[in-house]
Length: 637
Image 1 (cartoon, rainbow, N blue to C red):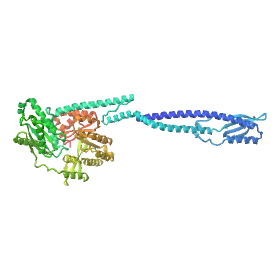
Image 2 (image 1 turned 135 degrees about the horizontal axis):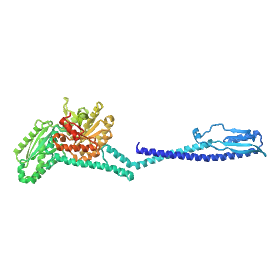
Image 3 (image 1 turned 180 degrees about the vertical axis):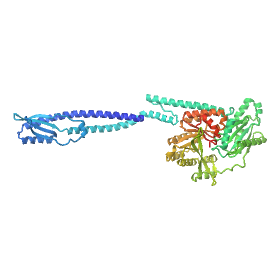
Image 4 (image 1 turned 30 degrees about the vertical axis):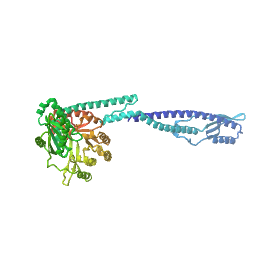
């Protein structure tokens, strides 16, 4: 029983006891008063009747008529005249039933009143003794009516007091409700602070809860800052701040084979022709400043472009993955123009031949070796053109770009025409022996032959055409249909663009409310970049989904770890760590340390951690040792 209910129970009990005591006191006092009045009435009536009879002739008929008249008019229980010899001369007795009060009330509160007595004279002789007792039913009726009236006033007073008490209790216990909400939030892995009330006892409680939440958030933030420092140390070039060679190549492999990656993209390579000569000319500090300037320009080239990443792959070579450009020529032109504008003017007097740029187009599932060989070829051709030039190779065999209107028609018809389908991939426990859930990944049928496009092939165009909301809603409907006909849990992905759509969030909530039985088996995932890009919208979505019983997670986690302190207030159920940290994990002690710390921080606030992109089943024991609760990828499918 809640504290509020206990308070109300105590108040009701006390009020009932007070009413009982008041009723007993009132009834007993009234009974005492009425008994006294009835006693006086008996004596007065007996005296008056005896005097009246003493003045009459003692004809038996006359005496009986006088007694009968008095009995009928005065509401008596009995009137009796007894001679001095003990003979009953006249007697009238009420033989009816007492009315006006229940029998149990009459038995519970007996009325005991002595009858009135007086002598009846016959001239100077005693005629007899008159005894009479008034009827008590009017006393009982008066007591019963008074009790009912007292009960009525008590009920009305109780209702009024209850209404006033409700508002008063709500006001007094509002800080306590805040503490209860805070406790529930902590249970849901949301760490919020509440205002401290003025009541000393509740103030101490609220302060204690706030201190606990503050310590948890401080611990989380400090550990997050430590892990972010470690992540940068392990995965970034210490001089330029760009991705290290190993981290960049892992990202490139994900771009070539990842589920969410597009069907094609471009790889751009920037090479300094002779770093030794530059070092000799500028000195160590000058060379470092030059490399930092190039790194800064390449890093800024990815601003606003999802998936674009720059890395330093060798001492004199930089590479950029550009998934958003239509051709390699466009990608190379963008990088070239940035270096010409932001870097070359500062260094051209000292290093006129500063760089060469090569760019090639890649397609899904292309081998890394062939891609790097192609970009080396492009760099060689750029070197023959002269200083600060670029060469781009757009493979003629790559698919011809589909016009936007064709995409619009295809995607619009996909939802209503049943062209969307789900492919399921298992997410297994850390030991690989059982399933956590299955991830439902959307596929698009493009023709009657059954050709399927992955999400990376069509979702970028859907985002450009503002069509992600109907596609995501179609995916959720497919997942619900599948859950109704199968066992286990299913996770589906929501696009970063979709979560910002208020209409979509309402439509999704209404859809889920009609299927409450499947909500506990339905998981929703949003890419990390979408979470932080639309944080307020994601927070609102997470709160809504949690209230409906669904679980919520962040996939491709770890690219923006510095902002992860915001996640402590969301109540996340799980995170799926980005594949770039998982690939080659057995040969990367630095990432092992980082991931172990990440798992500890997540577990401290009750978040499940899943590894994405596991390529080898042999890595599962190591991942479990690092603290991962689950894994998915080609190695476990």
